[in-house]
Length: 207
Image (cartoon, rainbow, N blue to C red; front, side, top):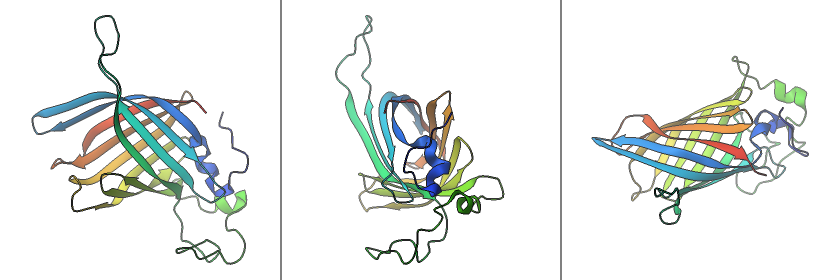
């Protein structure tokens, strides 16, 4: 059963099952040419809200060290990557939305009632969403997709890279709530490769 957090803006109800802190493990499995890159990793993900019509997202992951014959880890976990960003319904912004920059809203809060949010459903019965993510390696991504019940499908609409960033041209991501766990899969096109399997994980809610 999905519980809607207290104070959640009506516009975020379709994404409410994401809210919280999730932790678990997954596997990196990516092939570059003849080389297969495989690692197990741990991850901690947070989705929160601050009263505005978007979810704040952060992700921190680390490489899990291999174990010896007795099952004891060899070495310490190694920091891997972080991400930060915003998740929200995709719709035209109105005068009643804040911005651009620091400009305040004009008028009342748009889509503050469930009935108004329902008008945003797409022809598939879900809601169009957009996700902005930033990586510390000089890459920013804009994903477009949809949330339909406890499932989210995303694909990059734009990728921005700094001059020194590694080659990365696109991605898709799939998220789902299965048996009260957050499952995700991430395919990427990078390092001269076409879109292919990259990583997946299973996370449990810890907060």
